[in-house]
Length: 126
Picture 1 (cartoon, one colour):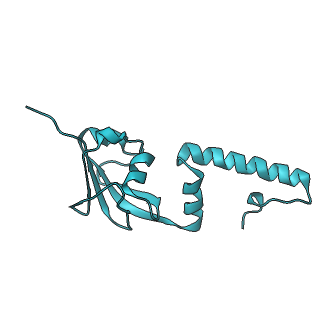
Picture 2: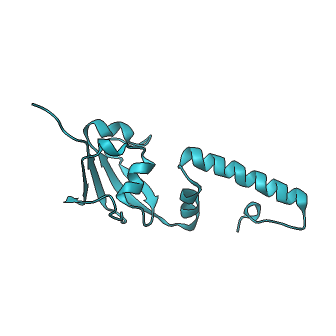
């Protein structure tokens, strides 16, 4: 599939080049998506689209380019709510409620294609 992802024992120079390309790609992926697993899922087509809604103070964690009506977000197939929180780098203590399709969800709930995710912070007042 991708020649630079295979090891080639016959040609040391090619092997070194392949390793260099792989490290380069891993570096890009780590910066852009958080892990190599995300890239592999993307290449295999193992991603699902969700509608992501972060409310109140959590809206600052929306990925670049997501705002207003454009809240479609890709996650790995099989990802949980907790995986999503980690991907978005939302501290656990800042999340009070999570809803999937309008129903309360736990952090171990698996996200599915087209689901609407609403994440709310704790609310204080007096």
